[in-house]
Structure formats: C-alpha cells, structure tokens
Image (cartoon, rainbow, N blue to C red; front, side, top):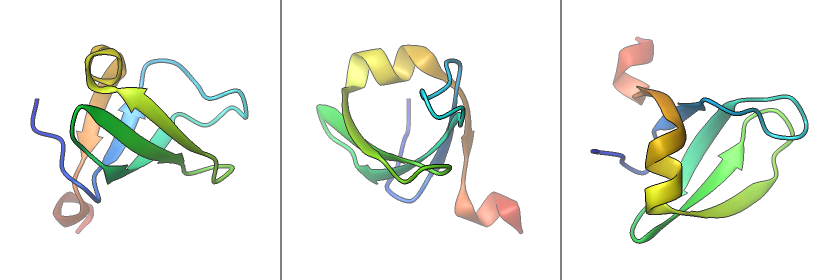
Length: 63
C-alpha cells in the first residue's frame, strides 16, 4: 500500500476521542500518525495500520 507523508488516512476503527481521520507524519516499518480531532500522536506498526485503513486522502485530491 502506498502511504506517503502528508496523506490523511480514514481508519476503520475510531480513536478513543471519536475521530477516525489521521495525518501521516512518518512512514517506514511503523507509521507515526496524528489524530485530526484531538491532536494525539500514535506510533502504529505498518502491518496493523494497513489492515485498518479504509481510505487514503491525498492533499492534491482535496482540490
């Protein structure tokens, strides 16, 4: 899956704050993502994150 820094990920599961959109800050073996609702940053293993991605929103797609 092609996830790049600056992408926004719509996840299948919500963050405890209720948001499900996350900004990608770092990619590699782990993703560092930031919740768009509360601002909390989380490190997630790539395999787990890729299973839970519903949609990738690219900055150029916004328009």
